[in-house]
Amino acid sequence: EGAKDGKEEEADHKGVPATVSALPRAVRYSIEDAMLRLLALQDLDKIATPDPPTRARKETLITELVSLLHVTPAPAAGAALPFKAVGADMTAMQTCSWDQDTFFKTLILVPKGAKGVLRALRFLSPPQCAELLSHLIRCLLPLAYHSATSKEATPIELLVQLLVKLVYSLDIASLTVVLQGLKQAFSDPGLHLLACTKLGALALAALLRRGHDEYMTDEQARTPAAAEALLQWAGECHSLIRRLSAGLDALFMASTQGAVTAFPAHMITDAEVMVDLLYELGANANEEQRTNICRELAASASRTGNAQVQEQVAQLLTSLNFTS
Image 1 (cartoon, rainbow, N blue to C red):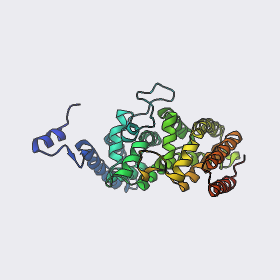
Image 2: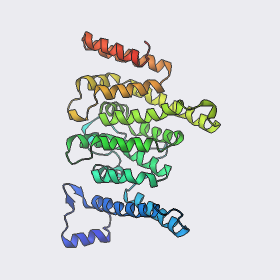
Image 3: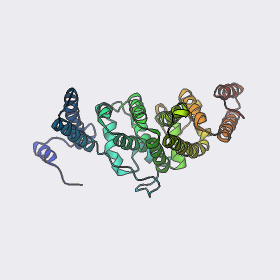
Image 4: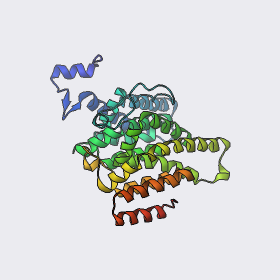
């Protein structure tokens, strides 16, 4: 273990327990100190025309705030990972593959911590938001598991709110880098399991929806740089969709039957969330991929032997404008 700071040494001397309800003391202190800095930032933000010392004080508080969250820069896209890619086993559900993510995951699982980060977003720069989003994405499976199994953990609705806010705080070029990190951080089985969890499916849908929104902007108004960024996004999305397509049968079974052995039922995606994800997959897919998605889902429905399910899937694919 690293050296203890003055606050921890004082707590040891006073006999303050290192954990309360299994929450590490360092995480409690970070949340408390982060909230104090947030209050100070909100006070400074009320000053209509801040002078240079006030602006410098704000920058210092923001730097300290990010430091308290233990935000670690993500590995560069394409660089060797300092951790094993996330798989599809119980270990992946309960712990982060990268040790540097553990503190942030624990903090986010505390409702007060998640709310604090949500309140802090308006003070953070886009690169800082991108790092927070990368942390969240790498931790999605343990966040989904603990949110579903612990009454004290941050509810999934708040986690989704935080994810969506982060996704929409970034431009498409920055989000493309985050998407590259997601693809690298998860193995194919891990990616398929992620889509089978409600939190994971909603996160993937939010990422893809942001790209879909970008496609809907006025093409004539795009700068050459924006057009190039959108092309890069499209390439990364097509790569992601190819990998996700191999797990569509598992997604279908999980959302219609809750069939993911050994995992809590509350964390498994449902039919409504599956439809949201399928819509965004289709909106970002090329024609070949859309046709493949249609065939995979039709085959999954056929394997159930249930005529009603098959009819419902056929109607779903028609409503989503998929073609076979």
